Image (cartoon, rainbow, N blue to C red; front, side, top):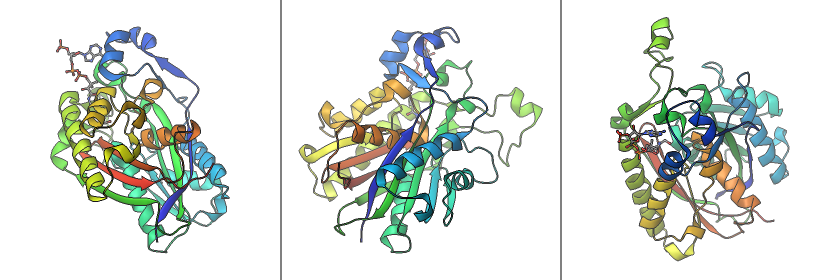
Length: 330
Ligand code: UT7
């Protein structure tokens, strides 16, 4: 039995933060941001709202497109690094607001690879026959953990949410075909938020030292992201007998256009085989892939039977790729 995607949706807040806005906030400029990252603007959620606000709306969008009522959902897996609060899980908030009255669920932290970790996990429950309807969400309010005085990070990140519904594949054999995921904690020192957890609980000192914000060594992450995403994607395509020409779409994590472009070139993919929407949203961490998938579907770039490869790299380090066959009809 295969798990397949039967609904996909996304949500972004209205408020835009443009490169011109950032020019007023830190020493940067539109030209630097555009050429180094490909980003033109990002969306920012209201301060008084949490990640669940976007997760719920993305999930409703996916359920509507699948034609499935919330009460049918068996399991909610929410990938995020910005939960509404530490306890309870944001999945619990989403469950209640959706009215998904007969499910269980949990949050998962896989950094920018979180959505792929959640998708691979959700697929196991459907494939084993244990569950029939699994909601997989990736959502992050990065603006809550970004230092808008730090030009190394504030130009990159934004807020958003995306979701897919997983059900049994109708033909029994197409859907989530294969995946390969990795975790290497040696990378932890290059991308982290050190304050607010059990090791460094919040104190005046952790706030003064800006320990609740994202810190990143961009150059190290950049290099590792290209090799990690390209190597795993290449292996996955090869072992499944999928040639570069037969890939309909690579939907990569949207962290930096130069990373996406290098990965695509290493895989011998043409630009029309690559989904890019980073210019509009920046890096929304766990949300980039389901948001991009939802827009690709909306734009008519995906048809039943298409081979699609998803790939991501992020904090941990975590990285990996997932190969699927598209199973949604128009
Ligand atoms: O999604 C999770 C994984 N994260 C990623 O995949 C992000 C990976 N890394 C990147 O995308 C890039 O490394 C960044 C976009 C973060 C930075 O780009 P870069 O080309 O690696 O720049 P850099 O850090 O090597 O900095 C080059 C120069 C430096 O100045 P000097 O030392 O050469 O004088 C920086 O201080 O650019 C400077 N700089 C900026 N200048 C204008 C750094 N940030 C900015 C800025 N505006 N916002």
